[in-house]
Image (cartoon, rainbow, N blue to C red; front, side):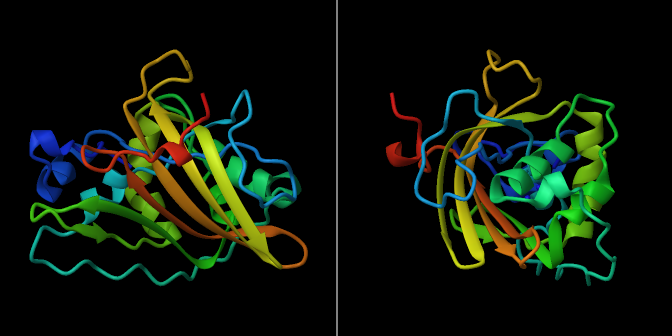
Length: 236
């Protein structure tokens, strides 16, 4: 259902200003969702061969965020009509999540299909990265779909970025669903490569009677003092 520069760890004196400078160079922490059984919204653990996906980077939005003491700009007004989606992209929760990360995934130099990206999101959808601030608190940056494309697109297309899900917990009721996913982020598709980031992404979805839509993507990255709980990691 999201990117330049990865969040620096607290031990390296992370600041929003540092993340902003780093984010101008490359993409960072990401999110991913592996396939749970279609139509199932009970808590599930990552199956073997979790989907390879890429991510929406925390530092991408933080890079465009104002410095401490400044007010974040509101998300842009969403006036761009949604292109028709591929039926195979929106037929299930698994399909729309897989499509989200497939469309932003790829090696350096690969142009992303941003119309496909737009087609997955309900109008006025939001992408919300979070991060720490020098005071030790946290902040969220609220982006619209076009904000994300404008700020994250150039970095995604200039840097290789791949992500897999290692665990997912999902719930649903009626026409709404929620997926809570643990991810690992890499620069290549080689899963033997050491991930440079991990975290958890929260994604909300809507079924309108004919298809699934992404409503919100909201995430946080692992860092010292914010380790991923065992219940959100793969079982040994």
